[in-house]
Length: 186
Image (cartoon, rainbow, N blue to C red):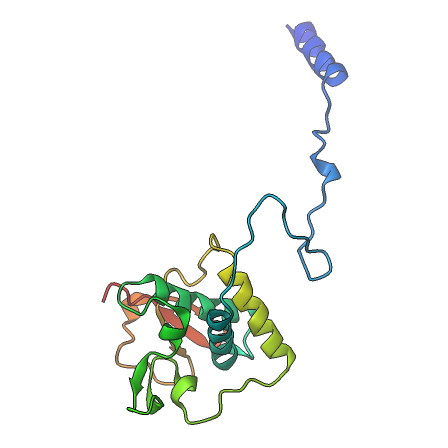
């Protein structure tokens, strides 16, 4: 029996390849220097207005956060767009809240505080703004992106007292300075 096993092993070593060939392919994270559009997947058209709204929301809510923090803010925005409880466009979600007859938002009556805080909403041309634009485009063109917020539709900063809507049972994750909640089932 030992001779038979030895022969089988010897046969396998001589007549099969130990290298499957996959080691010739090296994975490297994509960056702006190595990215080449795929010829097999169709290009996703990004609406410039919706892209701008998402980029501004990322910028004003998470400009100093990590990439994960910025992605999480973008995903909350998109989770709201997907939910039947909220408007169905990115800009409508970002600008949701009470407005005067003139169209201006009422101060401190918006879903995202930056939109109705009374300050200008013109991002400065900084790396943080470019990152926000890049992340907005990435999440808009990657429909199968894993949601790191686990379906969250709300968040608040961890340095403020929890708002009245913040049910600890619905807390999904904390990323950087934000605590995320899935309120879609409330």
